[in-house]
Length: 639
Image 1 (cartoon, helix red, strand yellow):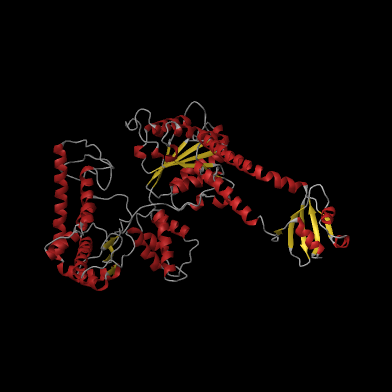
Image 2 (spheres, rainbow, N blue to C red; image 1 turned 90 degrees about the vertical axis):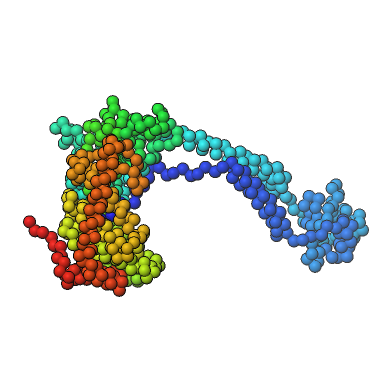
């Protein structure tokens, strides 16, 4: 049976109400940053302090007088007591004059005559107040500023930690703005789910025009619970309700309420409903509500269990003392059977919308939604694809269309062909081809007999589904596969159909045993599926004459394939009888499979030889072999 998953892929989230706070930096990072800044400043100052100043030599005042007397001085600049002497060759030397005497008097006392003194270009330069302040006080002020900056960063960090503690109990819900048309979803964007959309249109009508309902005394349901298999479009439908009604849409997951601290979840519930009431009319959507809504009293987490406190707060907010008419709570879950009864009573989640897997017409509509931006070739027929994907949900169909586009792009083609979509069906159902997984010649022969055994038993038994494809090319974890699809979709299955399915599952096992006198590990998954189906017939569906019409296990079943273990509500004697009945069903199915393969052994050999040659048999080629050997093909019965 093909896989199951999601309806249409929801568009991106709307703009969130709050941006997530940046991560708080640690104290050590601030200390390191401060020291690094200080070191950089010191290095830069030392490197560039002398840039732009020509290299000078310091000489004595008597040397300056000698140069002046010799006529080698072009100009002298006096800055306080500092002398900057430029010689006739444009070289510069520095010196210091006497404090209480003028430069002319000093040079005269050193023997420089008046003629050379008059030839000198002497000027006086006064240092500005800003530069004086900078040179004098900067070495003192800069370290003080760095220390102040360091303590400011520490204070800021501690303040941020304190504010984080105060906001710990606030809701983390994201909000979709009703005016954001780019991310708006309506019912037109949701293909299929016709009955579910009709149920939800009443919610939209109430949010648009509540007066019509209130005047006649009607009360709109406060809670709407969307249930269904994974991928059937629960979240997308909730977004469509918000888009149609044009109201704020608060959405979050059930797991976002629960933290390691007791009381935080309840606080976030209160804050969420307070936000929604201020923005009313509004919709609150809680995805995967079973994370907090499971049955209470399980004894997990002690008497002060955080999850139970969160659930209690949700119950009070939905139907407590305070009226809450204009806030509608929507929730989605795959496991409504584990929810607390208080959540499901009238006044809380009193309207339940069930989303089934899409039928053929719905699948065709979903495929059309996902094909709007994809260029198709002329041979593409979405009706055929819809017919070959029973049991697929919207997510499977979305993945199928995407894989088809990837296959076309990989082969450098501009359009998607029907062959791409057909290959994508098998890729989504089973997995990608593993062409690098090479069989030995014997392994390939065993696999061919195994798959031919499945196909032949399915084709001969009257209530098994017809075979559409046989392949011995490894896909996913399967070494080969036999694809069978029903002639028409059905909601109910009979006991005869189950028995033929079990016999078909054992066809590969029987073929290996009959041809090679031994069995391999290949049929392991077939045995698990057949055994699980036989046990369900006995314990859940009353299809055993020895046990009778009694349901001994629920949908959870026994511990198998990672499911949880449930306590048995029957005796050891009944348990032994169940095991005996399961074994009887399996043995009878094995006998039927052997009889088919023995009767049509020549056909088995022909199918196997053909598989060894071409590796993959499509339905027309396979049915031609059956018709040539007198095996009647299955056709849809018209009543």
